[in-house]
Length: 164
Image: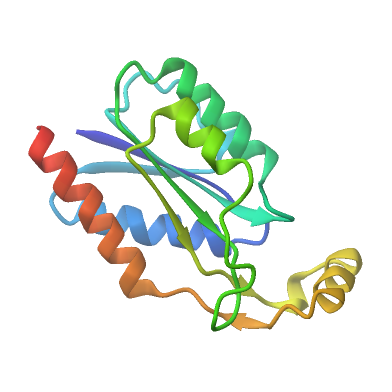
């Protein structure tokens, strides 16, 4: 079985989530590729897809949305899982999914969508991004819960094992 984990990530935090998911999927010998959506070539040799994106202003990044649409058009019954990263703080802010996830979930016939907390490091942000974060009082820090992320990947692995 060959799985593609494709992650749209602006500053790398969401891509790190994808790498952890891939590592967890590999524990049973599954062949997993991890790539940015713009770096993925043909998708016909993949048996399943895990697609993720950072969420900004309530939306997936454009390259993540476009790649999800590509997978939707050519997935031919292969399973798809979606994840988003973005909420910050405890409790998480914002505490809702990206506005375009429902459409992507429907288009890909996703098995599931999971929303993970994100990370905010003001030092890697540009001026405009820092201004927005200041205006909305976004908390700085790493709020990703690696145990929750790994558990979700194990659920995917279990689902795939039951299908194969």
